[in-house]
Image (cartoon, rainbow, N blue to C red; front, side):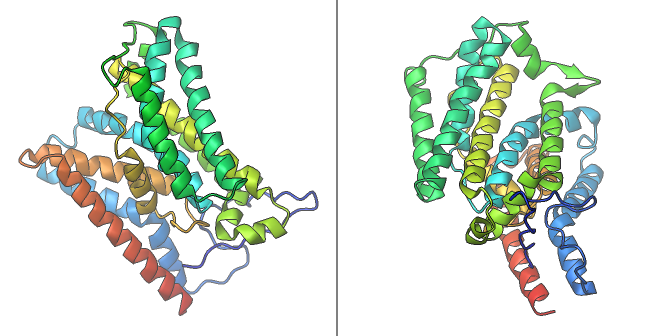
Amino acid sequence: MKLVPPPAASGSGTLAPAPLGGGAGTEPAGAELSGKERLASLVQRQGVLAVLLLVILIASFVYPTFATLDNARGVTVQASFLAVVALGMTMVIITGGIDLSVGSVFALGGVLAAWASQWGLLPALLLPLAVCGAIGVLNGVLIARAGMAPFIVTLASLLGARGLLLAITDEGATTYLVPKDSAFAELGQGSIWGFGHPILIALVLFGAGGLALQRTSFGQTLFAVGGSSDAATLMGLPVARTKIIVYLLSGLLAGLAGAVNAARLSSGVTIIGTGMELDAIAAVVIGGTLLVGGAGSVSGTLWGVLLLAVIQNLINQIGSLNSSYQSVVSGGFLILVVVAQRYLARSRRTV
């Protein structure tokens, strides 16, 4: 695949926003693409959506209960928490990084929110955001300023966040409950026009994320840093600051998702979030974002999350299979996507 080269810097040292109609993974203005290149680019950007629609169509014919409105609501509400976490992961991976701490940070955010909910809605949201955001900043500073490997730093944060969670809950023996009929509980359990609040929160965040990536200089800086960190530095771009910001966003979004999940469950569950970082990475890569950085989109991540959620729902519809098969299917999809990305990259280089 041909990566988008870093856009030219403006006179002030910042990047100019992408032109209207542009976006993640699009070719630079004026580039002439052959038919084969256009097809490869289209498959990379929209292939997961085609697969998702095909799976939904087949499942609707095979299982009558799948196509019901109640089932669709259940699938999308369940997927909304992973979607918020995967949104932050998308920005991290676009810059060429990785964040293995999001699963533990998600669980920690839920416990902190449940504990603070006794004092009202604002403490229940601000406390997890502050703590989880601080973890994200620590990750970013160690990676961007100290030059440490993202894998090692975020693995340490994974262990640290899980350890802090266990310390707060007396090794998991204490479960903090969210007061019933509170404003915080309504945040996770309420709905507008039949759509649960978690769905609406995820959609708003994805809309903001899409605009940030495609229409702002910050978004273009992410792609430039992921394409070549050294080249971005020579262009005068704030590489270190950008990396710190994306890890901060990843921590904030994971903490927010955990808080809303605690509101939905009415408690701070201590055993959730294990392996969630792998699901988020799988959704991002299945959605077409390159693990090496420099190309990706939030819309592709959203389709990837929904595809994983639909697969899980189909496994539940079958009944004779347990949830472990979702990992098998997700792993298979991930391998196919990586192989397809390598094939598309090779085919576009040979044109």
